[in-house]
Length: 279
Image 1 (tube, one colour):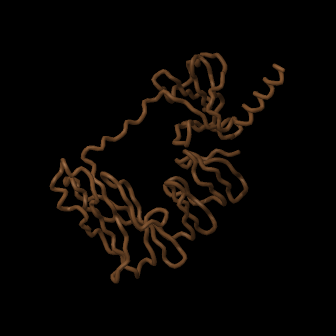
Image 2 (tube, one colour):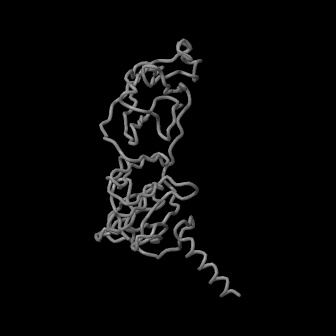
Image 3 (cartoon, helix red, strand yellow):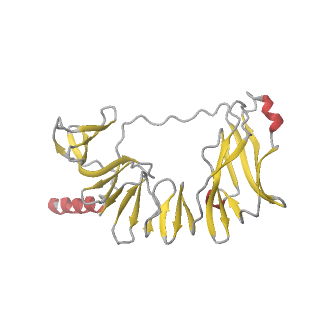
């Protein structure tokens, strides 16, 4: 019975190797002097790179993950916080903790805003409004509460429709807007219109924004996947800010990796820096 139990446990572990949060027992070893420390999590674990460019994870006097092509912290759902590719290009997701966590932002002094895109006779109007926040510490802000401040009017002669990510016409945020983009449609094609940029950095009530135009060209298709924008042109796909438009197929990013297939049939994973790892 003991043998059967061990065999079942081994099968379960193998079947879950791509998403396991359990730390493997690993192999007792000492890092070589020729190996370079890539990441040191306050002594909790270390990531080394050998002269042959392969990586390994060292924890508690053992090598717990070895012969990795790629390894990186990644924002993943659940308990896992690391992604790696093994020597066979298989995706591994696992937990390595011990790094200092991000501290939450203090809410004191934060203002609440809303930016709307509305259609008018002159075009699409973009306006911002203060909707709430720390009025106790900044009583002058009350004068601006619920007043619309005009940002821009976008002519309907240049775009058929304009919107934020995921085709939203409204964005709510606290504090200051960070790299929020405007996208547009013209006929059956799509483009990136520009980025909202704060232009008055001295005023506590940040109601002064402009649109920094982008010259991105037009695309045949545009898909919003999480925080990413997948773009298609001439039958090829890419991810804005991460990859070239060159793939026959490109899956949405999970963490820092996305699965791809090239027109010549080669496949693998591409990082959020555009580095490819082939099967």
